[in-house]
Image 1 (cartoon, rainbow, N blue to C red):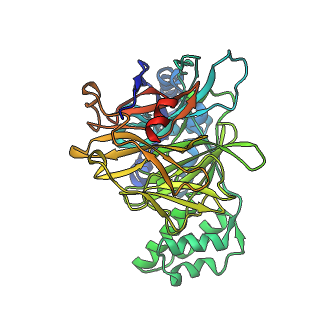
Image 2 (cartoon, rainbow, N blue to C red):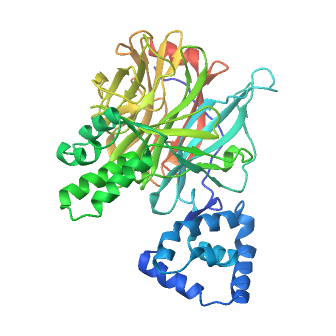
Length: 484
């Protein structure tokens, strides 16, 4: 049975004018020579160059002088190694050095795709049938570096989307390191990463049961400074890579959500933050928290991570662990099932799995719930975001990959009490790339990272060939009838 789908006219397009001011490190040797050149300028020349820089760039960023000073501080150690007393430098000299340590990066220049949608915390001052929502997107710029960006708007009673104005300045978050790490859990993750105990014990044995970020980094650096072998050095680098994967970020409260970008921060994300699947989670006490599962990628290793927030202003980010914390496609259920967290994942890259756990970052013992069955999904099947609660069962929007690596979107229904039991599954795609949707960064792809139900319809945001995004609606009554 073919289900009717209404594609909406709303388009979310990449905008190359949306830029962030990133730290630019040109290498120790070249930066040392650069700093020496800057310091040959007299005060008048420094002021003139700084005035020109501010004139060209101040309107493109909020508080760019503070950005310059922050980036100057990143070079403080190098400056002092040149026998230069940083405290003796004028503020203007620091600002000018910081400007050379800064570059603009267009976060959406290549693509804005793989959307997810959830209900906003704030549902005040709305008319009947309206819902305020937040959409997230995977924004991609130069070098295919991905980050997370947001849009806010209102779905009206006809489920037409009315976006809020997108603001110009992009706000980079302040990074706050986690205060304390549990030694037992940290050692467990090191074992999962196959780091030999004879190497990790060099560090871990001397640390207390709970240690902070700086304690571990200091211990690692002390040993790294000594004459050690290649294998030991690699193991210590991986330990540093792991601890850098835990952090909190905070945005300025006076920034609009459209100005906030979750940009790769830790080494585990150095090549991008991919495909965040946001979910509005109902805790046991009825309180609401927003989680997102995403893939961190460093060019070699994939690390599934969990993000949480109560306000879209501050976020906590943690790596997942366990023998099944691998590959992509993690999607958290919106509430516990029989007292346990539940998550969907494509652990082996081909099939759909479900897991249950006492903790939302620990995932073991995956249970296979779906294999490719129909030709349009013979290559692989996976989820397209968090399951949606309906009285008939858990609605799971899926993706399937078929001939010519074409991605289509499907749907399945699972038992509410036991989501290992499939109730129904569409034999035909719910959404396939139209002729006008086939061209893009990656051709022949429609894909989603999260949907919701509103006014009796499924609201399904989707990416168009990994370039732009749109959304479609489906009548829930018709969809559930087809699934059953």
